[in-house]
Each structure stands twice: as structure tokens, then as C-alpha cells.
Amino acid sequence: MNASVIRSRYLAFFRERGHKEIPSAPLVPENDPTTLFTSSGMQPLVPYLLGQPHPLGKRLVNSQKCVRFQDIDEVGDNRHTTFFEMLGNWSLGDYFKRDQLPWIFTFLTQEIGLDPRRLYVTVFEGDASVSKDTESIAIWKELFASVGIDAKEGERIFAYPAKKNWWSRAGEPQYMPPGEPGGPDSEVFFDFGEHRRLHEQSLWNDQPCHPNCDCGRFMEIGNSVFMQYQKKADGSIQELPQKNVDFGGGLERIAAAANDNPDVFLIDLFSPMISILEQCSRTSYGQNQEPTKSMRIIADHLRALIMMIVDGVLPSNKHQGYALRRLIRRSLLHAKILRIADMTYLSEITEQVVDAYRDPYPSIVECRQTIIDTLHEESTRFAKTLERGMKEIESADVIDGKLAFHLYESFGFPWEMTVEIASNRGQTIDRKQFEDEFRKHQELSRTASAGMFKGGLVDHSEETTRLHTAHHLFLAALQKIVDPSIRQRGSNITAERLRIDVNLQRPLTEEDRHRVEELVNKKIREGLPVIRVDMEKKEAEKIGAQMEFGKKYPDRVSVYFIGSQDNFFSAEFCGGPHVNNTSEIANEGQVFKIFKEEAIGHGVRRFKAGIVSVV
Image (cartoon, rainbow, N blue to C red; front, side):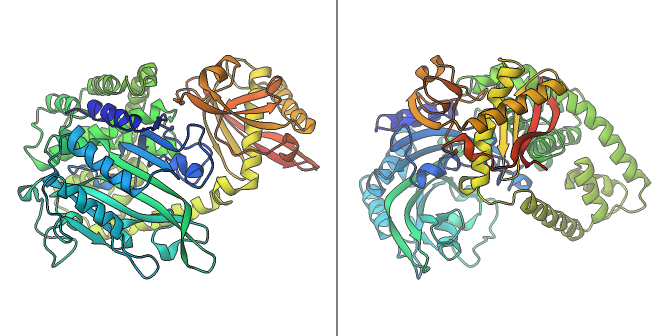
């Protein structure tokens, strides 16, 4: 069964059960400087999980594009990827465990056809603050019994501590701050069989093989989070009046289970790419460990970076752009390891990815040439960087861990490539020295990020909310003063400044800049009301409400009007938050000001602006 069928069956399954389908949110989170990429289906829905009404109701379903870099060094094994799709369904204070668990069991066993004897589940074992999730255990026993399976605890149902089976944004219950919601979760694992074990040593020493032993036999394919508790000021955990369900299932992993093969790189989303790499490298996939690992890294990284470019990310030395450049360079280095000299594979793989995702994400077709041009431009640029790195190696008497990290950080040399080079010179590298340098770099990065994003979560920042509304005014002013065809290509808003990327071929003139700033400040002084209206998408499009380029929206949307609904200065598809009146954006003696403007790609310019005091 291919991934496209699984995706469509999942969405149809939950639509039939009263869920409204919502589009995938962009990979770059809107107005959230605390994270570079959308990494889960629930991330864009946090305001609604915390109680804000969703315009489409209480039952939602989608397939969310996600990027995670936490496990990038694990990519190359049979299951880790940087980009993946998360199948998700949510209950916002509607149904709960008695509906959710049977639906997931039915979907996996009847819609996908997984053998229930190959499914194992985990639940929360309880602690001092929250009792054991006996309700989920009872439901799972009933479900397995319905297909003739006696599901005993410790054999098919496993209870684990909060570290494994509890969800909150802060982690385990003891780390949750007052007001934080959380709850137990129940994971579903697929058993690929004893013969699929990758190694005998378990991370859970002295225990028999079980779902969380990480031996390779079991793969998690879905997780139902039951957000039913909240931390109180006195430290206690109390039941929430609105209990939510948040399910996430990895599309690629479910496809691997349906194929009864734990190698996700053999599902249909990857197999055409692997075939191209086999032909270009004249190497058979799966025959030898190192070439297979390189093929997996190239296939994963190219798919991920293609989807990032589609969502407006372009190579740079900062933030999302740096992450994109890192993926491109790692994939190019592994192509070098495979001795692939002909760069035509980049275009061929791009075509395969475009073809695989043209139906669920149509904007990928429009970005095809941009993707190819970006890859070839970066490959040319990196060839020069690679040459400089090789010169540093040649001039060094010893390749040690410090030099290996310098090559990794400055030139993108993966650890394994430097070890190949060192072994040719009869040298070995101290891995611990490399890891120590890496940890120092991570600590510096964390410190820098903490300073850059001070102000906390944007959803709770008054300053960020003001700048979010100013962002709407700024976009409208650019359209009215500079070019009515300007559209937003991306945004990022912190408590200190707003950032917006737009399609624009030329820099602003001094006159343009002055007129745009003056128009924004004029609308702030006028004290225009800011109104949220939920309406049909077609109706919003008819009145000219702005939407972000390439983003998919549901049939019913929230539109924020600045001014009246009949006579507005700005109207945008948006989820908030905003001030109630533009007069709240700036205090007395403050004005809106454009800080910086730069080109970040062909026909795309980035503006940074904010509110400053007038001396």
C-alpha cells in the first residue's frame, strides 16, 4: 500500500466521523520565534487546544508537513528522517478515550490491513501526582479481545513512566509550570518480528524485548495524547473541564508497517530516489552499510530541503536558511562519498519528489524550477567551500577532534567523511574530542537563542501582539504605496521586531520607505478597530482578503479586518492574536520604523521593522 492511499484513507476515515479537514500549516511557524520549523501536527493548534474556539469546530483532521533536526545525526538508519508527514486528528473538548482508541485500532487493522497480532501498545503507569491510566488499559483489552487476542499487561500492553508516556510542553508532571496542560498518552507499535532485531543489546538492560527496548524489532506508528490535566498554582494536578485528544501518526512509518519492512526508505515515497542513486553511484542499495547510509541521507535531505524551499526557505547563514544550506551540503558530501560526479541526479530526484507530492501540496509544482536553480547554485558555491576545506586538511599535520569539528562547522564536512580522509593518512580521530567541541558549540547556540528570542512565547507577549497587527498594516501599506501585487512569502515576529518576506524585484526608494512608514503611522494614529470574522474562504477571497503565498487554507477561515468590514484598510487570513484597536500598537512618543531591507532570493525581499521612540 503506497503512502498516498494511506493518507487519503486516513483523512476520509475521520471525515466520515465528523472531522473537518484542515490544511497543513507552513513548515516555518507563523509568528513563533521559539522554534525554526513546524515539528508536529499539534504545534499550530496550541491556541485551540488551550481553549480558543476553532472556526471549523471541535473535530479536526489533517496531514501535517513536519521537519525535525533533533535526530539529524541518526538519519542514515532505517527509520529516522528530517522531513515527515504527521497524520493527526483532534478532539477539542468533544470525544475522548472511548472513541479515540477504537477508531485508531479500526483504522490500522481494517483500513490499512495491519495484523492486530502485530500491534503492541503502551500506556502511562502513573506516579505520585496522577494515577495509572487504567481506562486506556481496559479499552485496549476490549479491542484486542474483539479480534480474539488476550492482551495481558507486560505481554501486549506495557505501562511506562511519565518520561515515556506523558505529554506536556514542559515534559513530565513535575516540570510543568502552573497553568500548563498535559496528560497521559498511549502509543501503538508494530512488531516486525524477532528476526528484525538490529542488535541484542537493549537500552533497557536486563529486560526482555519489548516495544521501548529500541532493538529495532518494534516501530512506533501512532500516539494518542489525552490532554486532560492542568498544573495548579499549589503544585497539584487537576482535571481539565475541556479534555482534548491529540493524535499523531507517522505516515512513512505506517507505510513501512503496511509493507512489513522496517526500512522506511523502501516505501514508494523514497524508492524512486533510491533507484536514481543506485544508477548514478553504480552501487546496490542494502548491499553494504556505508553506501546504503549515504543513499538514505541524500534521499532524506533532498526531500526535506525541497519541501522547505516550497514553503519559502532559501539558503543563508542564519536560522531556517542555515538549516537548509546544511542539508544541501550534507547531501552533496554524501554524493561525493558515493563518487557521484554528474549533478543531473539533483534534477531527476527533484522531479520524483514533485511528482509524489503534486496532489497533496500543489504549490510544489510552481516551485519546481526554483528548487532546481537553488540546488545547482548551492552545489557550485559549495564546490568552492569544499576546496577550501580540503586545503586546510592538507596543511594540517594531524587531523584531530578539534579540526574535525572545525571542518564540520565551517565547511559542512560530516564526521564520517573526515574519518575516511584521516584513515587514508594512517591517522585516527578522537571522537570524544569532537563531541566535546560540538557540545561547546551547542551551549553557545542555546545562549545566543535565549537572548535573541527573549520575551517568551509570542502567544502571551503583549509586545509581539502589537507588532503582529503592525505587520498587517505594513503589508497593506507596501501594497498601496509600492505595488498592489506584493504578497507575503513568510514572516517572523518577536517582542522586539517584525520580519516579513515579500515578492518584490527592487529595493524601496527613500521616498517609498518614507511614504510606507508614514501611512502605517497614520493608521495607528487613526485608532482603527481590529475585528476578527469567521467566514467561508470563497467569501473572503471575493472581498480581497490577503493570504500567504503557497499556504493552504480550510474552507472556513478567520479573517482579521483593520477598519470596518465594509471599509477596511487591511483584511488578512489569520489566526491572531491582535490588538483590539490600532492605537494600542504604539504609545505616545513612539512610531513605526523600517529597520532593514535585504534581498534573500530571486525576486524576494526581507524587511525588518518595529516600534521605536522618537527622540
